[in-house]
Length: 187
Ligand SMILES: Cc1cc2nc3c(=O)[nH]c(=O)nc-3n(C[C@H](O)[C@H](O)[C@H](O)COP(=O)(O)O)c2cc1C
Image 1 (cartoon, rainbow, N blue to C red):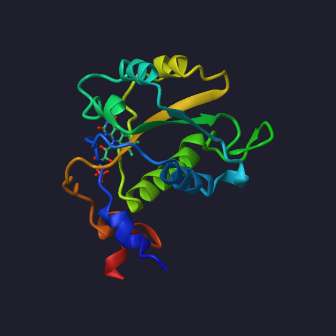
Image 2 (image 1 turned 135 degrees about the horizontal axis):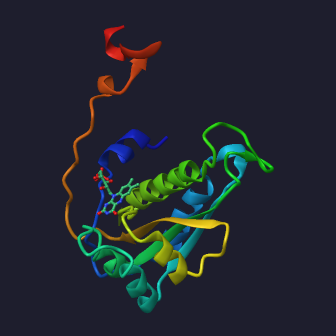
């Protein structure tokens, strides 16, 4: 059994990459990790668009504000994954929402995203989730049809430098026991 906690704890967002291509085999393992994500009623609403065409990358970069710390990563990574979703699938039974929370595509795409980033890290690759962008413009660039949303871009590449750990809340600051506000560690 591999130590998944150690993998999760050592992952860092990586925004600078070596000029090194990704093998087909490595990419395949990342896509298999995406494939095994859990989802609402196994609806698997995700669609991934892999971008290697430099011109399309440039156009996608134009949808990202230049102040975004991941601006360069869009064109400098080894490959770029556009994470998209079919809407009105996750969270629904047919046309009927299964909960008051509406469409669950952001949730299920988030799980796919985490699988991609975790598997990439386990293979020695770095990723950054890029969501601060003009989504409408990015949808046009990749010719996404009606009924789908583009959620994020994930550049993938071998890390150029070590990244520092970002702070996290203490477990006791977000885990409650039996009722909201009763601290987990007090029990
Ligand atoms: C939904 C989401 C959107 C994000 N959008 C961006 C972004 O547009 N640009 C960027 O540089 N980083 C972005 N990030 C990366 C976060 O800033 C990063 O995950 C966070 O600071 C924690 O750092 P860590 O991933 O190294 O633990 C995003 C992360 C998530 C999960």
